[in-house]
Image (cartoon, rainbow, N blue to C red; front, side, top):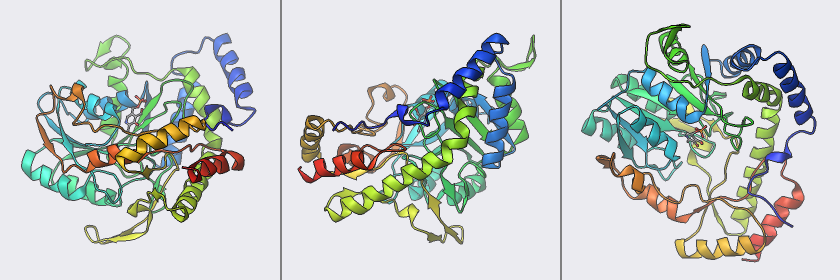
Length: 381
Ligand SMILES: Cc1ncc(COP(=O)(O)O)c(C=O)c1O
């Protein structure tokens, strides 16, 4: 039996019909840019994540650029980012003219290391940092990152492209971020029917600049406060997001169950399946508070020695089991990074992860039969 790495077709049966009906109405009314669907999804995002402002935009990369620009990050400003993330985090910094500085991760949770972050602030005096909530969970130091950044007057932007539905002490991870960003890329936990993104914040000024920058820097139709660009969410994408919205919690529950099942079964079978320390409630002395993260089941992480990983890949391919290597190289190693990367604070940890990581199939409504097939194939390795 073939098991894909992810299956976007698995969603609720009536979704396509509901979406097509909406598209038909939008076409008949020639409602293509902005309008009711866009307003509706922004209202839903605000209510769901308890933030004062939600501004949709073209994609998650633009969301990061809008976040940086709205906070006044620009040419020659230094910006910290983790050495293990999707390339877009790095691109966004370079595209606003700022200087990226890669910081290594913690092997406790695979997120930016808090101690190195503190060290980097003293060493480099950055204007901003992008904390990425990677793999579908977050750092148990999230509150500490926020606190410390505020104390040191470092703008903290949270790349939440992979963390839709992640909670920290029972509340949305986006809720108390200064600025957080979402990607609705179709393969994400909450995916659109194409590219889409959003910026969330509780800061009115930031929200107004983001709104303006994403619409050509407009104040009114033909007057402009900034040189922005066009990154408006179109009505079709907004309609697709609205149709999907009621099912996201159910999909997350389904993902989480499978993620936990993998941890239980693979551990018993002797595999090195990763459980982030941040998923265990922990007292964080930095902020004198208990911190409990709940994941969204976006990805699972298995570690396997470099030499064995290639053999496992061949074995999975032979048995038609999908897999991911997220990510096979660190940001610092990318050829495209070299013209821009002048400073780093790395300890070889992200590299170690990139050389040994493998992600197994995980998507909402994965069947028992599919799951058991993956386990059986792993047992045969
Ligand atoms: C961590 C991270 N940041 C940013 C992005 C960029 O989002 P998009 O593809 O919507 O531009 C992605 C996903 O693609 C991501 O995983």
